[in-house]
Length: 178
Image 1 (cartoon, rainbow, N blue to C red):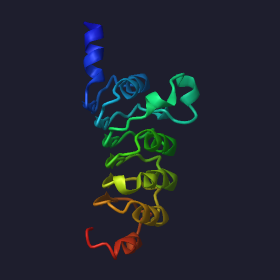
Image 2: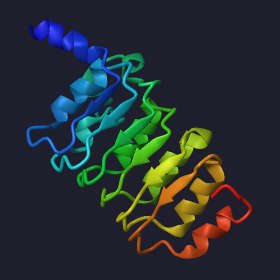
Image 3: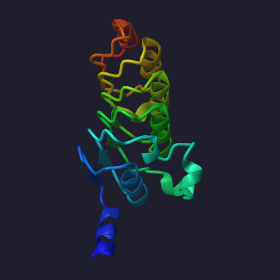
Image 4: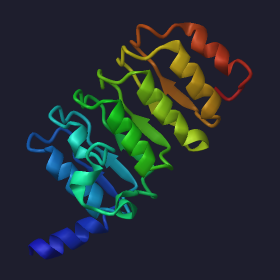
C-alpha cells in the first residue's frame, strides 16, 4: 500500500498542504523531489518550514540528488503565505528550480528582503501574479526592478509593505494593462 501511495503522489499535479501541523522540512523535500510533474504547490500557514525544506544552494550538497532531479519545470504556482521562517535564499532556490512560475504568494514571509524580489525578477515574462503583502523589508528599488524585468505581471499585492511608496507605480505608468 505504501509503494502504491508513493507512486500516485509522484503523478500528482496539485498538492495542497495548507496549515498542516505535522508538515516539516523533510516532508516538503520529499514532495519537491518526488513530484516532478507538480504544477501547483500550496504550503501556506506552515509556520515551521525553513530554508531546509527547499533545494537552496547551501543545502544542495547535503541532498545528494543530481540537480536535474530538483528542477520542477512544470510548477506554475507556489503559495508560501505565512511561512515566516523562509528567507531570500529559499526564494532564490525556488526560482532556480522552478523557472516558469507564474503565480507566487509570499505574503507575510517577513524575513524576505529586496534580494528575494530581485531573485523573483529572474522569472521575467513568466511571472504574472505576485503576492508580497505584509513583507516589510521590501523597498521601491526592488519593486521598480521587478516591474522592468517581469513585463507580463498582471497582479502585484503590496498591501502593508510600509517601505514601499507609490513611486513604484511610476515604473508601470506606460503599461496600460495594470
